[in-house]
Each structure stands twice: as structure tokens, then as C-alpha cells.
Amino acid sequence: MLKAMLLAIGLLSQLPVARFLSPEDYSQANRQRAVHYFAFTGLLLAVIIGSCSLVISSALPDLAASAIILLLWVLITGALHLDGLADCSDALAAGHRDRASMLTILKTPECGAIAVVALVLQLLLKLAFIHALLSQFHVQLAVAIGCALVCARLWASLYMQTTPYAREQGLGIAGPGRPSTAIIVQCCALLTVSFWWLPAGFTAALFCVQALVFFSWRQLWLNRINGYTGDCVGAMIELQETTILCLFTVYFSPAA
Image 1 (cartoon, rainbow, N blue to C red):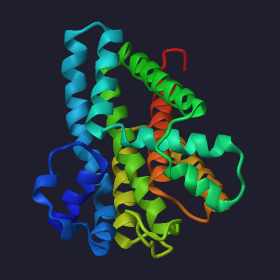
Image 2 (tube, helix red, strand yellow; image 1 turned 180 degrees about the horizontal axis):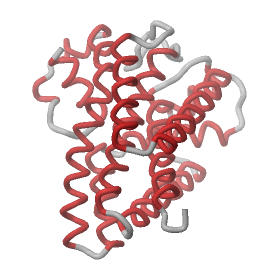
Image 3 (cartoon, helix red, strand yellow; image 1 turned 120 degrees about the horizontal axis):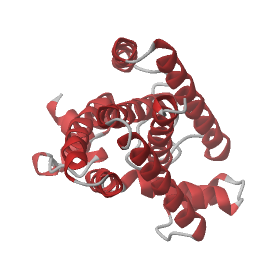
């Protein structure tokens, strides 16, 4: 269990846990178990980034604080998911319909113009939503960051467990085709906590929009490459995080 947890943290963040893992710990079985700890990794990141956001926001002007919070967010995740968003953007923009070409583009390290545009827009949107929340409610920003980090990674777990891996080799897992009991329990626990701390209507809307993003993204790549790659998972995490920040911003906006 500990090795799988450390593996999940190592795969999804830049926290220094790799020193506690050996090459044997990256086995297929451990990777499958690690998926169960994606939400835990998100919670760990939420505690770090959320706590820092409260300190930073009390010491700096709102715009500067927002930029530092976003910088911390990118650094602690190693821009891993942004890289996935960039690769997916290039693959979709290329217009190729055959599976082999799409997989080749997803694996290519070069970054095209569309990828750059996607990254700039993604970071601008996150910065705008962080600043909007920070200028109104410091505590709500920490809650929104926590929700984004945990929920996005829980959806990533569900994605990897219900979707076939598109490559013959890689860090992906051969999902069972259905969510495991552990993932279902985590989803129920998260919904329970959300309904306890957030208005029921907002929680329901939050879940429905996230589900729409999940199923749309999953079906898109099933149609293109008959499965998923690590880039697809990373890109979906970014999309879910931004969606959640946007919904928090809209709901808690004074104009709402």
C-alpha cells in the first residue's frame, strides 16, 4: 500500500518521493494500485497549495498573489499535466484521423503553435479565476483549489480504470473496464463531504459539469485512438481543474 501511494505521488507531483522507490516498484500491479491514491495525492497537494495561498494572499496584492499561487501550482505538479494538454492540442489540431498518426503526434516532444496557444489560454484562465476568487474570498479560493486538485485526480482514476490503454507499452494500466470499489467509495465520500460543506444545488451542478467534461473527453479519444495515453489523462486533469475554478468563480461572484 505504501509503495503504491508513493508511486501515485511520484507520478502526479514533484514531491521528493522517488528516492523511496526502486525500479521494481514501477510494476504493472503497483501502477494499478497507485490509481487508487490519485485523489489522496490531490488532497496532499491541496493542503500544500491551499495553505500557501492563505499565507501568500495575506502578504501580497491580489494580482501578485494570484500569479505566485499559480506558479506554485505549476511547479509542484512539474507542469506534467500542462505537457499533456499541449500534446493533445497538437494532435487534435493536426487533423489526422488514423490512430497511428495521432499516437505519433502525442509521443512527439516538439511543441507546435496550437500547443503554445492552448497553454497560454489555460494559464490565463487559471490566473483569472484565481484572482477573481482571491479578490472576493480568500477562504473560498483555498476550498476551490482543494476541490479542483482532488476532484480532477479522482476523475483521472476513473478514466484510467474504465478506458483501455492505447499503447502496447507505457505507464498506463489495463483497466478492468469498470471503476473499482475503492474509487466508488472515494466518489461517495467526496460527494458526502461536498454536500456537507457546499450548497446542495452548487454541488450537484459541479458534479454534472465535471461528468460532462469527463464523458466528452473520454469519448473523443476513444474515437481517435481507441483508448487513452498519459497525455490524455494529464490534459483532462487540467480541463477539470479549470472547469471547477470557473464554476466556483461564477457561483461566488457578487454578480451571481
